Image (cartoon, rainbow, N blue to C red):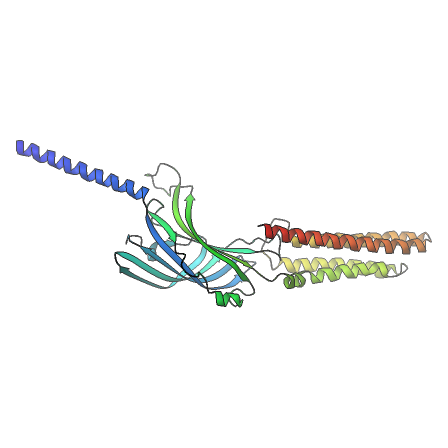
Length: 335
């Protein structure tokens, strides 16, 4: 009987010890999650589709860690990728550490800021997570040694189709999800995962694109502006040029909008075209006033009105353009 009692006491002691060790281990993993060293090298960025808000990127990414259960070959997740394909991958173990390297091709969805187009600067974003382990078990640490993109190709504009890389930054952090993903063991409706983020800031030569974008609009305004210097007797020509200029500006705006992403905000493109349409309307209104003066046999007064109004319209249009463009550039530089 004593032996049986001693056996059960010993069994209880062993079970309690194991349970305590398991609890301590769980506490340690939460306090000290395992670190994963992660690095990236971008080899190619191309097919930047401005209207569809997409771009394609090729890169090498590597991980160094000790816990073999992490298995980034299966559990690597890129949340904001439309599609991604692993072209190559290799894994080897050295000194109790796992080293995994992959070459990945991604088609990314992003959001473009077009409020100040064509003075805009864009940011290409990629985030990486391990879908199997949360931040209590796994924490990313960025590998900052060396370069992170092919700077020679990028400097020649071959990989970005006219865009230039201003900066590339990598950093690690946490992404919190406001859900427990159906896990009843988690009391709060939130879960956080360690994330590794890549940010590439890009810009392009501005003034050439600005002229290509707005040259038709400015020519249309100048055609309407010439109406002030057509003799007041030729009213049909003055009205015809003004109305034709209105259609030209509207057509130019539709062409530009067809190449830009849809947005609900009022952009620089909208402001400049709206200003131009309003000033052409002023030209039409001035022509009507001039016609009224002619019918009242006030030819000299009509000519004087045209000359004064021509100067006022041109100065107002010029200063308004300068202010809108300056404000757009200042806003972009401020960001």
